[in-house]
Image (tube, rainbow, N blue to C red; front, side, top):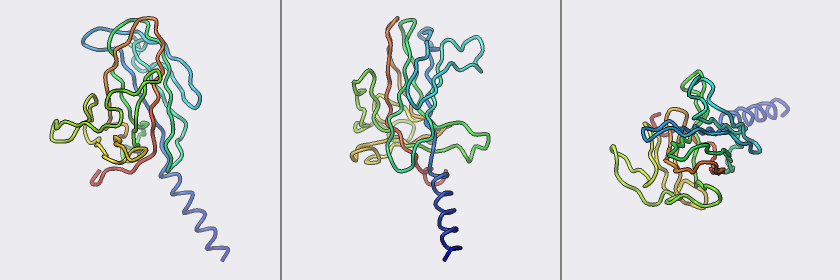
Length: 194
């Protein structure tokens, strides 16, 4: 009985480790319309910093990473920053990078709010066919990221993403204004065949 309990406990630990994930967002002010400098903010449970690996262009970018998200429940991931210039940003929602591409965790991305207001089509209910798949209007699904109708909180839609397969949207910002983006995220499973 003792051996069975140890095996059961180890199985539960492995399942929890495999099912947990880290949410990540990359925000870029480097767009064809112009450059927007960004100042990172602070949020509980998140690390928000410049993308230092971009060297000279790092002042136009922010990287935000959550703590490990608990399996089986939706978490609010909050990203704060100030736009030093007016313009358009690209907000890319994804999972964390891992050296082993097969270990890059998948996440479900639910509704997104900006300064307390839901983005248009935040429940991903309105879709358009693009590049051979259904895309939520106002958002783009990159590579193998997919839309999960009914896969989000309260039975609404969700995007399924990882580091290389992302959900992104554009956000217009005004100089000197602070922004708080809240993304509902939950660890997910890789799409079939990925």
